[in-house]
Length: 334
Image 1: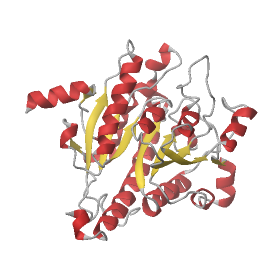
Image 2 (image 1 turned 90 degrees about the vertical axis):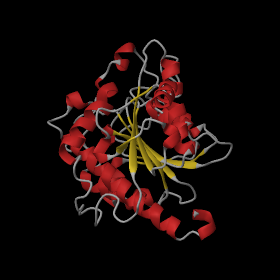
Image 3 (image 1 turned 30 degrees about the vertical axis):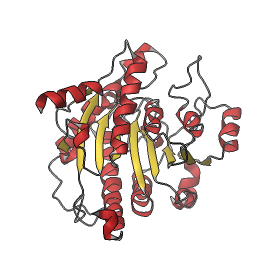
Image 4 (image 1 turned 45 degrees about the vertical axis):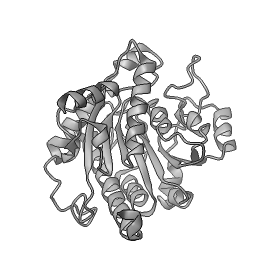
């Protein structure tokens, strides 16, 4: 059994985490996946330069687990006042941690393919991937894991930037382009983008292209003036939602550990309310967290913020999923 597990892990280039995230069970063989949520670390996708391969974001999966576990790792059976119960409550559901994709800077396409394939297995097993990045090209790899011949997911992007460049220096899968690439995937339905502010890589023609593609763009200022209802009211409920969170979409007062902090991002009450709504009111497909640079953090502020947002989202999503299964006829749940 141990030999088979090692062989499977090697096929997906997976390395076990030093300690599973937030009390999740360790899983070394994806074929044994039965949980509703599966944590996986992905160090990078398609970096523009080699220094991005060795950036602080590439080490975020390991450091985030360490910091999140130091604060909340033993809290699985504690009462969570944001959920009205423990993390999974009475749902009977759980989460596993399958470890990290091992990045090979000599074989970036191979690393990307291994990450997508591991996530594809997670999706095919019916679990929601909880992806710890990594730079902002990782969301492209995540979305590819849902590949189908029809729309199967919607995408909610939380980011200071719209990431809709077609290419930068000839690279089309870099961190300025993930939403552009997602918009071209036939299995992606609606795209809602929230948190944009200031300037980034987008030019006027890139915003025009995003709007022409049908994306709903909700700038950060609109959230400040109208609340998170400005986002959720625009979200359709026809497909499960995959959330892609760039840490710079949050205000630097709650998440300073990122490479491009900008004032005026979503504060914790707004982000928490949005994550609660996504988990509670919509079907949940998965999430990635990218552009987390632990080395730039102030203390462990960003890790604490991300831990709480993940707990709120996963806790509400678990309750919705359990309630939906409870309402299904017995022949569908047997």
